Image 1: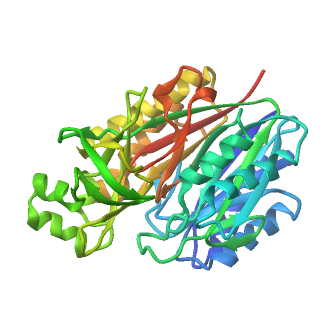
Image 2: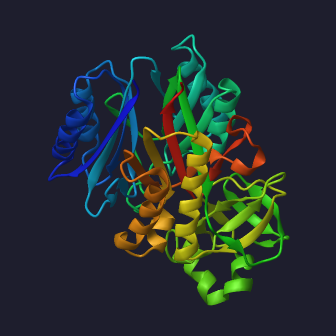
Image 3: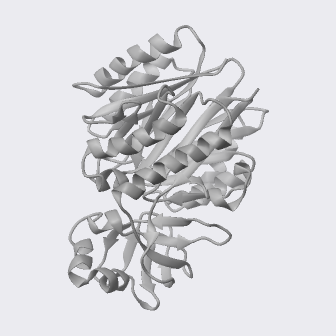
Length: 401
């Protein structure tokens, strides 16, 4: 029997929050065998403490991964105080496997391959699903996905990049009771598990198609041979565009990311502007390949909530049965767009209406999301995974019968 238990709790310390959450986990799981766990925690807690405390409750042999966040998500909605959210998996037929790669920045593709090989080497069964938690400030997830896809060609891949509550200083990845930075931690499943993924953002283009004429990774130097900032100056005015130079992840990014036109797809990959340098080059929250066709996008709270509802409904339709649990990765820019956690709760409630109010749920507000580009194919396992910004991802689980 496959069972998922989730719990969220706050506390005066990280260890207290974990112990408070564990009471609910134990009440739900009982004496069933635990095969693995995921935890998302506020970065305001002592990170070593939260990771070691949960591993202590799980036991040394139970694989466990997770990440620091820009806000935690549970069945109760978004966190309103520093908290932890824990998801525990129990089964006597499904296998759960964890792996970690460190010193990742600059070596993403090779590290992605290494990560996949570490996971596949733990079982003689096919890896069906893998979720990754990468450093949200130092690691380019696209390279990880490329290497991981090569090593695990049949696996559905998702993930959420770690956050630090909007401080943009250091994020943390958890692996079997340890804490790391500049790392990627992964949890994978083999055996009779079914997974579905819904992906939407809700933003719409307001500009014509433009071409990225010079770029390096996440940094776009020129668009149509003009400084990248010119796109924002053209549509928003120089005064608004100047805000990007004044604050990290300026407010202008909340409603105006750029969308990358993806071939053979009806969707667009969003990229949020993070920084602007003196030459007008913009660092985005994900890779923007040179030669890409892009458009400036606009979003609203109402469309963001509707996108969350559609993503969840897509996942339910794909799964075709009652889910055992739901994993949610939502960009922290969406959370900020809603202005208050009460408004953010509307997005979570929209997901719950689709997946069922009693479905165990855990997730967090990320610095980037990883998920298939859903519109590319009917079978999710043939969809290419990609890095998203300002997007909500719903992952549903059930046992294959």
